[in-house]
Length: 287
Image (cartoon, rainbow, N blue to C red; front, side, top):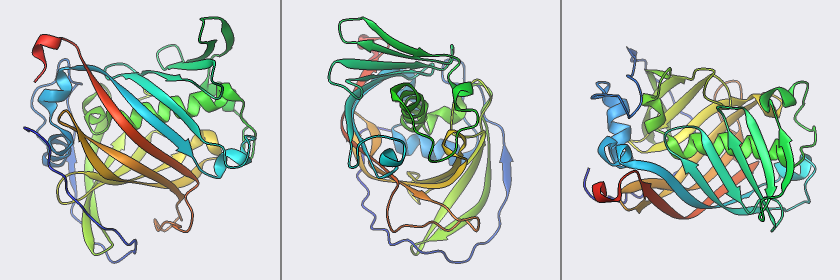
């Protein structure tokens, strides 16, 4: 893909009827070793996002991110709190840093390989560590308060997944199958059911991703295991082009019903993205 297009779609969310078309595929290993992705929906989604060739040149991203929503008051943070930070993530392995984080003089790092969240002062002084991080949520319910370490784990793994999708579908152990399309807001969205291995920290092992006619992701469904196993419908939009990479700059997270409809009255979590910087493995290979 060369350059970026800027599709504009206005969405009023409703649920209509569905028809069934099944195709099962298995995607190859991730970008360092993968060849051509043969499934047309995975390939279409990657091309719409900027293309596999561009992604293969990257080693990381830097994202200006603002996180808000009423759920944080329930988790023990001040009502109306927003978390504004610069996020730096690796595109190859699940490693992400937020700075500042919850305080102007703190930063947070999450690393899935060691299942560790680390809080540090900006001068490098250790503030706290959560390890093994996932196990620290055992017995938690939706209203269970979170300290900065628990919050760091959730925001860390979640945002790494968001910013590496759809290329994440080609990483080792990830499998995908196209399932029946979904009709919403007068549109037909193609869907992928994606299964993640235990080596990838994510909301839950099986999730569903929705793509519009251009191949851009518009919705994803998952179960937030660390947040009381809440059913979620997560919408993404307002795509912008950053040096060839298409990024959704507006994300809204809603409660989802068992029948797959979504309560759209008020989002529980909001994510708004400002600038996105691309970091290349080899600056000479920069497109």
